[in-house]
Length: 230
Image (cartoon, rainbow, N blue to C red):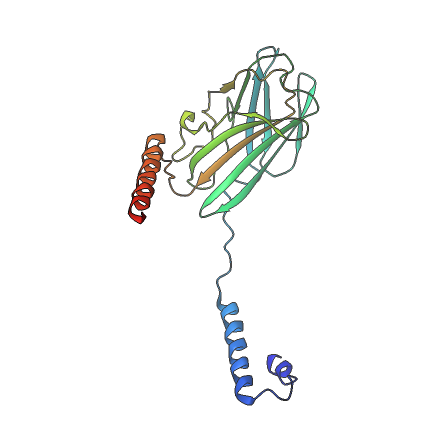
């Protein structure tokens, strides 16, 4: 096919040039054929496995304790007559890292009373995420969103408060523990995202003091170079 196409080249191209061109194209085709295909990361959470979601607030009569299947399909529940949908996803981030996300949405404020606190957990008093292999949790945060899915506030990275993160056992924070965030009430929060960043290998996070020292060292090096250039 390639040679047939090349035979239609303009007649004034010399034979030597044609042979070089053919050789170059054949080498490119061979390289493409032998190039390794991008590997698809194996899933971290067992598809179809169940997990529990826990929500509460200062002024509720009863906490929300929902059971959902990790299948990417939205499921409907209710918290004191407030309809809630629960869905989830898993994203391959490359280099052995993945993002596991659980999304809750409602058509009204999760925390309607001004300044009330919110309480939450995954697997609390129930089922944690069923992990298919050993992974290390290096970032775990909860985002609180408005009706347009825009960020209102978030919890920050809570991984240091997770009971077992290295390797992670699928609970957030533990089988019988909860997290809480203050002053969520009255902010118009209609969405909550639980985002878990995991890795096949331990991920070291530099200490703030180490980052500061590194920055000071770079500044000193730049100052020294400037003086020498003068």
